[in-house]
Length: 455
Image (cartoon, helix red, strand yellow):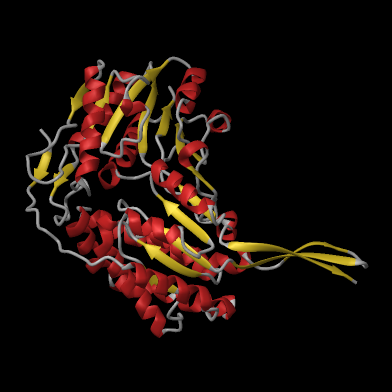
């Protein structure tokens, strides 16, 4: 029996989209305003760092907007704001070092310098699943680098976006120029119009489809872009893994934010000798999760943010069941109002099933057994995605050896989830192009210039 607390669905409100004429004015003002670009890095950090206290002071209010607008449980929303705040701190601490001039070569005849100057106007387009952390992780670096930023939050979390934009309005009182940060409200058409406009770069977190649309729309102007396009992230459980800890972390990762996380565990490969014991532990831990009212501090699993996501997850489960899979627990819709689903565990899965090939994005843990490491690596790499992966073992040397053979942007050993400050984040294959978070990621938002001085 799943644990469930009831939740009354409330219509949250309506917003007017940014008109075409307003968008042109926003782009034009950002294009022509060079005030922010000419402010030195020390002063830019001083201004942006004020966002840290603003996030803390507004944490409760923003978390409640998220809970009401897209169903994220309060404690999950507060956690998201905390990690977003930490990311802002990290960027402010690291960016002066990341974009300072580098001497590439110097002798008594010449000097070669690498400099990092603003690109100009950067458009940030963010998703609905993480409406605070993801946009801030993409907005803060280009701002600190001296770019003017246009931000379009997802049409499904626009109220959260406006709440976040209020914080930037407060920064303007502290010295952030009026045109350094501007918000655009709208759906896919608005995003397309931004990308086709007179900007210099697009930073998108979204689906593969959205990434391809951005590339097409950017082709005419050859915009620079960074694309983070999701994943089908595998976890490999070796025979010597610490079962209880591993099961806990796998369930935590696969159900975090109702499973609507690009870096969450989406498929699990477990060694056949420990398979039964591992599945038993995963099921036990899944049963303890509370699904329901996101305004209840005890809730672990809120509703899906949008109807189509619930339908997609349920269709993946139905597809798997029709091909021989077996639900051990949960994995079914709760009630007929709202977009609730009991977190689930599904076994007897294989790569002929959508749930092991397509991004599911829901609180369901599919577990498949393997015989040896070579098979596990082959299965993990059998995907068009390559964002994150994890290896679970007490043999760290073996874990590192396996990690080097996994096709992903980030491979973790005995953990699965977020990136570490200063470390590159992004995917390979169809999980994206470019990197963020790190020195390499920050420099994505700069014009890297070579200055050659002859003495």
